[in-house]
Image (tube, rainbow, N blue to C red; front, side, top):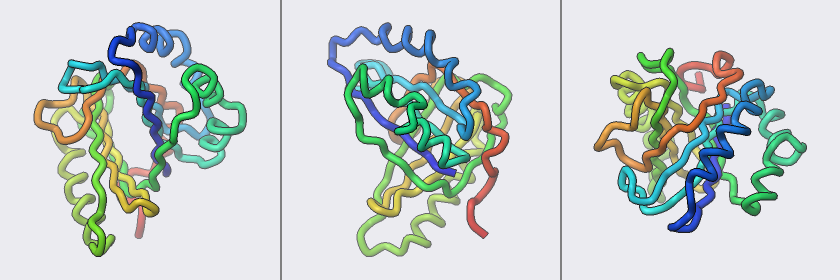
Length: 197
């Protein structure tokens, strides 16, 4: 399991209807994408939910690296992003844990993402273990559709990403997003629970 996200930060006066229309007309193209657990088409709008920026920032959960590779450089979709917005940096993390919440059957409308660095000199086992405990509490929170925990061992950072039935609750740490569309063709194939023995 691999998590992936890129962020396209747009001008302060950008008409976010352009992104909404883009997702409305193209989002369905990912609804049957091979190897894709989920793609949450996410936006943040300047001045809403505390966002300082206009941003398009889709989040992916891949159950297959072949699908991820095909998307990024095999002619499977990322080329449209590069053509329209330039080539953004793509953050990616190795999956640690994934689970469904009580709102699994709902269409998620909100998302939250928290990225934290593991302190220099800290034991990764301790840091990731603590993050798993926090993730276990999050996935059982009311309104959770699903939640993923993943780690980038190059930068030693942990990402906690959660899809919510409604807007991400006030007080949730990190960035809050609106979900414009959820493509989840192979979500049932993503392993549930902690991803190590």
